[in-house]
Length: 123
Image (cartoon, rainbow, N blue to C red):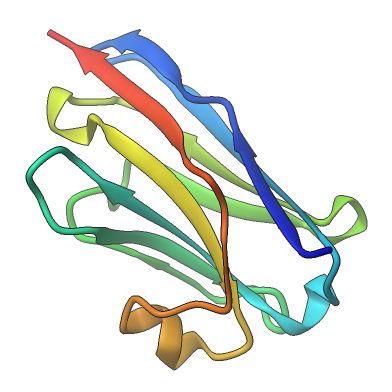
């Protein structure tokens, strides 16, 4: 059974930090790119960051560049999103997603999705 399980969300004050984890199982992790998306109430889903497990290339949305860092531990089938200097506008449900094609993740499509973890940043 394929699973992506996110954890690490929570409530934090502005300026604080959180580290999200996405643990994958049921598919060949090394063959996939992993992305983090987020969706705030009343807003469209937004791609936040991506990492390719084949060459470790990364992408960040302009809104998080310099504050968020994505990393992958292939031995643990886990992708992390370190979020620093959090802002209230970062409040959203964060989802990880996996797909063989980076181009599909760029377009917001993925073979597999996690259930999401809530991040709330207070003033």
